[in-house]
Amino acid sequence: MAAPGRVIEVLVKPNARSSELSDNGDGTWTARLKAAPVDGKANQELIALVAQHFGCAKAAVSIKTGASGRRKRLVVG
Image 1: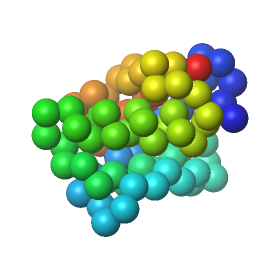
Image 2: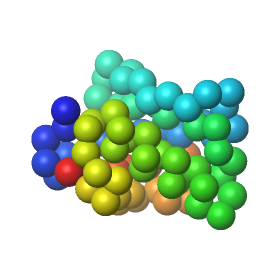
Image 3: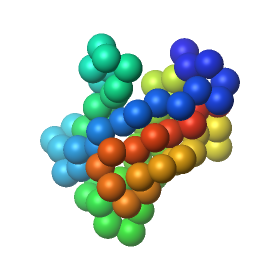
C-alpha cells in the first residue's frame, strides 16, 4: 500500500489487450490500459486501476504531472 500523499511515476501504454499495473522494480510502474488515449478515458482508467491496486478511493488518486503524455506522476492517498 502506498503511503498517504506518495508520488509514483507511471509509464502508460494505452490500447492494450488487458488492463494491469506492474512494478518495474526501480521505483517506477508500468500501466497497460485497454482504453484509448481519447477524451481522458485512459486517464480515468489509470486512476481507477491505481486506486484498486493500492486499496484507496479513486478520489484519493490524482495526476500531478503528465496528463497528456505517457509518463505521469500520480499522487496516491
